[in-house]
Length: 89
Image 1 (tube, rainbow, N blue to C red):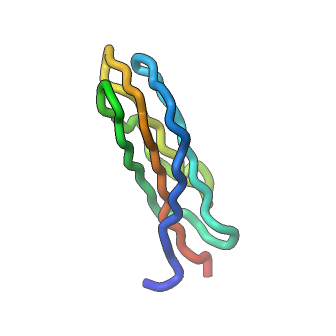
Image 2 (cartoon, rainbow, N blue to C red; image 1 turned 180 degrees about the vertical axis):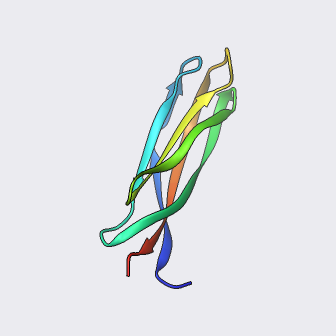
């Protein structure tokens, strides 16, 4: 399939509180629509992250919502979200 690609966006390191949900959004280039997406994270200390939502928030945006496990917190060293985008033609 031609006319598609993956757009990645790295987000700043941040502290997650207990069961705190954080949202990350990635935009497709102009003229492309989102057809999927995902995320990866490196946790410096504490609990691993869990996805509570991954979805197209608009025709050209992919949104990921992450949290820690129940009763735990984590220091996130790096969160990268990505969108799979395709030409609209």
